[in-house]
Image (cartoon, rainbow, N blue to C red; front, side):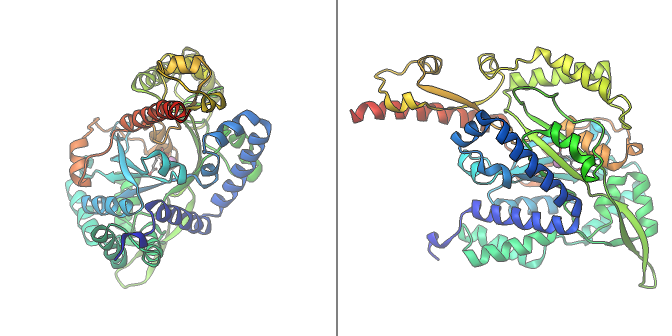
Length: 466
Ligand code: OOG
Ligand code: NI
C-alpha cells in the first residue's frame, strides 16, 4: 500500500474525539447542556475581550477551543493499559506525565494520553486521563485475588479494534475506510454498560473495599466517566450552572481567578446515580444502582516551567495550611480568600511571568519583524524590546495531581476518602504501560525553543531576500 493513501493521525484523533462526544452526549444528557453553556460563555467572553480574541486568532489557537475536550478512564490490568497505549498511538496520542493518586486516598496511578507536537495540538488537543487500578493497595488478600480473576477474564477491546491497531502498526497508518472502522471499534471500549460483570454481592464487597474498585472491576469495560469541554471563563460557567439545573462542586480546583491564567482550573458536577443490573445465579438480572459518571469543565492557562510549577505548588500548599476546602462547600468563600491571598506572590502580568522564568512562551515575528532585516539578531529579549518579536503564553496541556484528587474525591463521595501510604511507583507503571511516559516540561521547552529558532531564521531569511 502506498503511504500517501493513509489519513493522518490528527484526522483519526479528531474523528474519534467527535464520535466520543456524540456518544457521551447520548449517554449523559447533562453533558450536552454543559456544552451549550460553555459555548455561550465562550462566545460572550470573546465578544467582551477583543484582545483575547485577537491573541487566539493570531496564534492559530481559536479554532481548537470549540473542539477541545478531555475524557477519563480507569483500567484494571497492565495488559489493558499497554493495549490502550497502542490504540491511542494510532490516533497520535502518547502518554505524558505520571500522577500518583495514592496520597489522595485513591488506589490508582495515571498518565495522560495526548498529542505532543505544536501543530498536532493546534489541529486537535484531545486528551484522555488514564488511570490504572492498584490492587496491591487493597489489604484484603482474598478479595484482591477474586478481583484479579474477574479482571483477567474480561476483554475490553473488540477483536476488530485489536486487528486494526495491529494493521496500523504494521503498515504505519490506516486508509480512510480502515480509519472509520477503527474509530467505531475503538469507541466500543469506552461505552457505558448497565449490565454488571458481577453479582450484587461481589459488587458490594468491592464497593466496601473502595468505591473506585467497584467501578473498575464490576463492568465490562472502562466506560468514559467524564468528558470536559474547555471554557474561557470558568467563574462565569460555575456561577451559571445552577440556572441550567446543574449543581457544581463547592470550589473551583487549581489556582484562583487571575488576570493571566496559569495552568488549569477545573470544576465538576456530582456523579449521577444510575440504574445498573447485577448477575444472579439463575441467569436473571437484579436491579441496583451505581455512581461513576459526572461532568467537568476547565479553563486552561499558561504552562509553567519547573520554577513556576514549584512556586504554584508552594503557594497552593500555603493556602491549604490556612484552610482546606470542606466537601459541603461551607467554607468556600474563606478558602477562595486564602487562595487569592497566597497567590499574590505569583506575578500577574505576562511580561513579569516571562521575565521571572515562570512560564513557557511561544515567540513569533510582529508585523514590524516581518518587514525587518537583522544582520545579527541579538537575544530574544533584545528582539522583543526592538518590537520585532512578540510572545504568547503556551497553553498547559496536562493535569494537576491535587486537582485530580479533588475531582476524584468529589465524584466518589467524600465518605470514600481513605488513607493509603504514599507509594508512587512510576517504574512499575511504565513497565505495565510498556513504554516510558514523556516528560511534560521537555515538550513545552521544545515548543518554546522551536519558536525562537524560527524567529531567528525568518529574520535572517528576510535579510537574505533583500
Ligand atoms: C479522573 C480524575 C482526574 C482531571 O481532570 O483531573 C481528571 C477520574 O476520575 O477518573 O480527569
Ligand atoms: Ni477531568
